[in-house]
Every structure is written in C-alpha cells, then in structure tokens.
Image (tube, rainbow, N blue to C red):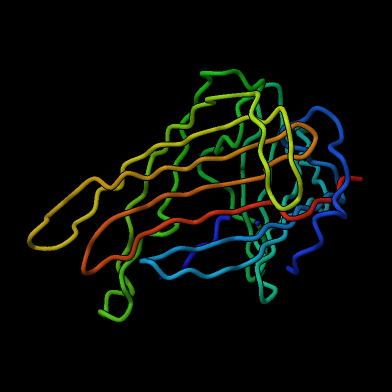
Length: 237
C-alpha cells in the first residue's frame, strides 16, 4: 500500500514566518505557500516527511466560478493538485490531478473542505480513505483494496491557541472528523469497525496549521498508527 502522508520540501526556519494576514481560516492567495513537517508513527516505527502546499494559480471554470489550484508537493518532486471552489457556502474540492495525469479528474461530487462561515457545532460529511491503516506488505497483501470511510466533521471550537514550529497562533478553529472503517482483521477477530479520528486546526490569517490523524488497531495483517502534520513556515503575499 502506498503510505499517504496527509498531509503538507525543505523545512524552513520558523522565525522566518510572517505574521498572520487577514481573517480567512483558509487563505487562497495566489503565490502563498505552507511548509509542514509530518511525523508518521506506524506500528511503533516513527519516521518524518515534509510537504509544501501552495496556490500557484486560479482557473476560470465553467459557469463563471473562480477555482483555486492548491498544490501539495511531496519529497522527491511528487505533486498533487486539488481544484478548490469557494462560494458563500464554503470551500469545496471539485477535481484533482497528479503530475502523471494529462488533465484533472473531476470528482463525482464536490467534497466540502470547510463549511463557511465557521460556527461552533457546524458540521458536514465528506468521503475519505485510510491514510495509515493498510495491509502489511511483507505478508503478501499489498494489493488489498481498502474500504472507503464517510467522515462527519464538526467544528468544536473557534478560539483555540495552537503552538507549532512556525509559531503560536490565536483564534484557531478546531475541526474534528470521526468515521468508522469496516475491516476484516483475521479469522479470530473477524469484521470490526475501526475508529478513524481526524483533528485539524485552522487559524485566522494563516490557514491549516496542524493535523492529527489517528487510525489505531491491533492486527497481524494490518498496520495502524498516527500521522501528525505541523506547520513549520508559511508565506502569504
């Protein structure tokens, strides 16, 4: 299974990060960039990756909607682009494209990233997939297709203070997603619903500063664990 680092490149010095700019929880300024350190703790083995997210351009989309391209650059030059539409309802992903695709693939249905305006108790549902849980490849199960997960996201707070390598930020929204992954573990445990928990912190004038993804399980055939993603630097034109 390809390990999906959620998450968001060389790590820049945190002291070089600018001050927050504006009131948006999800800035989409063309030319903006965010650098993240990603900690993977899978079956007790810890490793680090880095990711750079940016907004390289906008696209004039059918119907006159303004679409923003948000790019995630992984180590080794692997990139994924997500097309984001912003309107009075919120920010939604409508298409995606990897570097090997000639053109973007439209999503069957728009996927809500943030429902705006953010209010405590506000919620939305979004399809997802396991980021950590996967077959242990040394047991010959590499090609097992993992089930999808329907996550329910809830805004739990709007006034949190979050400290990450890029600095300490106030007025942050905490969005928590919960879902259940139906999975056949083995002949003894049979089918079980594995809890998937995704916590995200969005700060005014900065954007996404931290993610915690928890996919814990105990199985002879599947790996589980956590992924933590923290902002190390950002640039907002």
